Length: 296
Image (cartoon, rainbow, N blue to C red; front, top):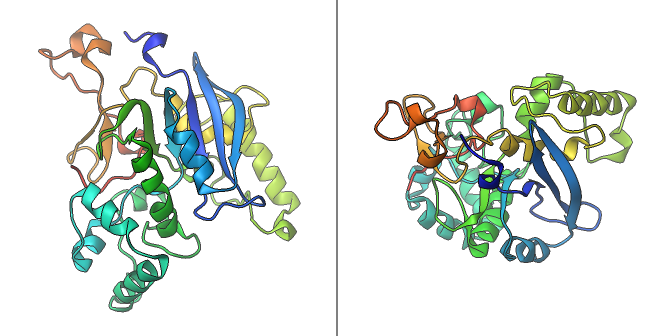
């Protein structure tokens, strides 16, 4: 059995932007796990990437869900002749300008048939996420380009991808998966103020209510008044009995994704090494990080 002392006290969910500003800053929702709930403690906003970089580099213990892709489709990387090892690939990618990224990806798409222009990670389809090579609507390729280097430079631990400070653990999160589970295809937000319709307001209220009541596959509830900003942190908070610090590729259970692995010292007696099985693998849809295509 795990103890509360083994779980990082600070959980965070990051609503990321590759071009933050005062009008649309990067937002960190800070929270903590309280029994089966995720309690929102506060919000931090950053109107520059440098501001977020300083926060990430500060010595404090946390596990965070970041709403940006952590990798590129293997098919794309192979076609472009880029390094296949994750860290080398990210170092190559960060050295490119956005114009170079756009031109390379556009050329890749132009050579492919209608209906199959983009390459996808193994989890994009099941999660319903945009391919991480998209450079517009939404520009997730630029989010990867801006965000992953911040995490690498801050020295945080990226489970299954790159070792770092085990007290600061960054995981890819996709809050849209929870939103669609609750709202189906109802739209709940828009960057255009003119499109903030009554229907979207009602959808947001329904979403907050469902999260407050724990009405999702995670079963983690946000205290009333916690607001929906906590849902990226909620993707981490459910895993109190699991080791978020170690993810292992499991091609049989979830091809192309990673699954949490229990720390031996936190496992029930019948699941410790020497007993079969000693791994606790979650289904792909419960993985806190539906992101990986390269394994170190």
